[in-house]
Image (cartoon, rainbow over all chains, first blue to last red; front, side, top):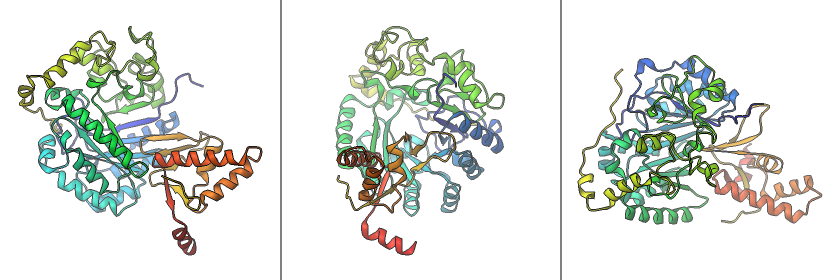
Length: 367
Length: 104
């Protein structure tokens, strides 16, 4: 029996190709090309190894998983391996026949992402015209039997539309609706000053969503993630480094989180060369921040270290330059002042000038 | 929200027991997995859209005959309410269930 508890979920980044160009995309700034993507058979092997290692759920994501022509085969392969399969998608490109094929292959759950409640904001954020199509996809899903989550990514430019977003959710067949504030890595970090909501916006949104949670209890689960820049303590990023989740990138590299590639000096292993279990237990990148050995003060002696695991390593690196620092969003972190300075710019007199900055759009990788 | 004793709970769409042998039984659902042990597994296995809440209670009272029947009932109602809160249960109403039984 191994001392390391098994991974619970596999984040399957099937491709970095995507018809949308969202300004907060969680993909790395360096996108993988189509030619580097794992084959259908290779993925099937990975699903089998992951299930054997203890993984229960596979979250198919990207880029846009629908960009893979073999998506139906991949879903079937993951189900055959015994995994619970979720599809995290923008709904593009999709028609009803393909949706039926995907459901027949055994998909357990769809998470459909939205960029706002209206076409204009969705187009500005994603650089594509896609909102009307997503609403059509919702109508198709109503006629079919599948678990559905709607995911709205929230930021300063769309946080005033929560009521309309919730109405879209309530008129759909969704059992869950997520209002997830942008997290500030990669593309989101590049656009941070325009995306961070003001404190007044955030307070209003929390009040509204708490009311919605109460009203819809038992009917639809309403979940929200506030921007951790405004929090007192950091989030338990990924449920702790190398503790629950394992991400496989389109080319087969195994990462402890979406953004880990930005941390200098980390060496990642590839599922083409090592098994999933071997990587989970022994890969240098997974061991680097697993457990408490790496922790500095104030984390090392903090009562909350088993709740938040020191917060997010990528955020620590982005803001302080040291991946082993306490997450600077923590009110106890020595470098919290750097986060406060960003909040001051967003909430203070300079707010108008930061809001007029140009968007940095995520491109499509060359094929 | 109240649980009707004559309603027939079944697992909601997107919720299912894992199929793998030799592993702990888990209730899999969107973004979550619940480990099922002892009574929780016995309850979930009976949420089949045919048994009423009342039947589930009496079956478990028979299994746990040494426990106070009222305590067993309260525990079951509490656990079903928790599953309902997590959106893991649907309820088939009495009349609809009879209709389905007729066809099946």
